[in-house]
Image 1 (cartoon, rainbow, N blue to C red):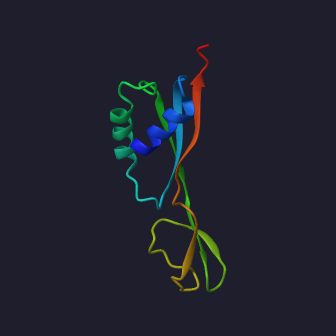
Image 2 (tube, helix red, strand yellow):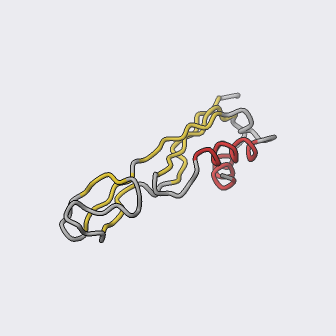
Length: 106
């Protein structure tokens, strides 16, 4: 979370940030509640202090290398309907800032 907060601070400059929206993939290996706790700690005494954190969860999706079928999955261990476990991740590993909502204080 410190990296996300640091990046948001650089982007926002001196503007007051109201909301940070981040995207977190289901396969990113991130505990959402840990992100929320870390956000509160990392934003204290910064221009992000008091901002809300909006977490958008991205579904995990894989494509089978054997048959080409694409499907949403819940875990890394999900096999394809054809029986293959040889799959590529299409989405679900994201951890990124989607956008910042700021107040114009000029």
